[in-house]
Image 1: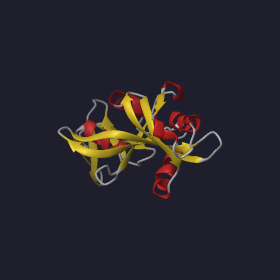
Image 2: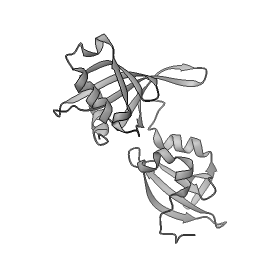
Image 3: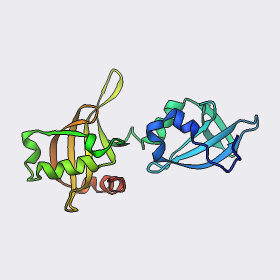
Image 4: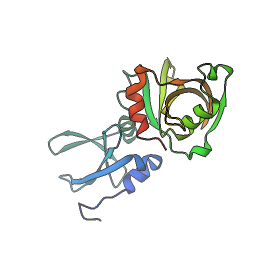
Length: 193
């Protein structure tokens, strides 16, 4: 076992291998029963995931007290910021920019944003937003993705697409970033590749 001040990444790697790069190791704590838990903090949402070496997850309840919780649920809470009240919620795209496949509807260029410019933003957008459009039998169903970032000339754009399959998008809208998306744009810009 590592000393208590040495990061242990295995618990997070086991739970969320695709999201490890989105977390910082903060500290380790030892519970009264000797269980050692690792505290990981998400870079963007600033929320924590606490995991032990056996894959169990914990929530910090009060001073030096942790309660066991469902690991998948805690991870979802750390990755998503207030999803019940936001129209758009963030998620991190992990694939290489060249792995994204993009097509365009005819209306995608109606604001005089070229396919090359909107494609540039979509391919380099590390933090994307999904739209909560309706509630279906399995809960909220996402159908649109918002890409925010600077085009190759440094101009801020918003690009809305429909995800047809994993990493396959059809752009339906592209225009300069509107005032209502400025906050989302600022957050997404930090993740631009």
